[in-house]
Image (tube, rainbow, N blue to C red; front, side):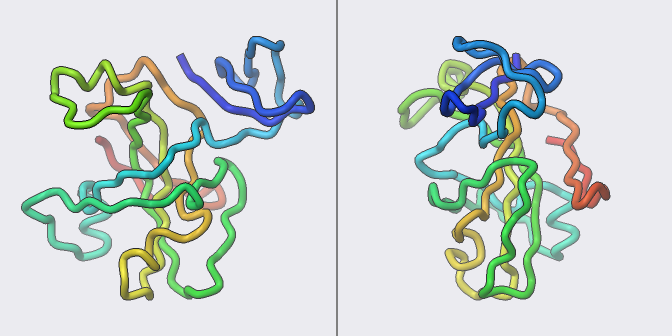
Length: 177
């Protein structure tokens, strides 16, 4: 199943996404009857960096021995399929399409066997990065630096998913999980 959040004259609604139509408890909305929002509103984005081969090669990064974690704040949330405002403090903006696990409840210290119990589904994060900023917070944690969505897929296996990043219709990135 695919879940979406939309803005309608009736307000913000959630529902099942089916080929452009979103079915909510309040009714069904077809293309042109709603604005697509990010599929969830995370309290923070907990991210792992330098974990996709093509991006690591493209940026000439070394692969870390331990996972490289960072956090993006809620202000980084940006709707899918919406132009991204170019940050005024940077002249070197880049991107990385990432698979995002959407956690469906508060949790901590989750064991591998409990993962399926807490993951609501998966979506796509466009991890924007201002390469000309020296500090990671300035590079990664600015307003609209985390376009998310368009949907949460609840019934996918996250292993081996094909992912592509497109800029103005041109494929710029291709990898798999």
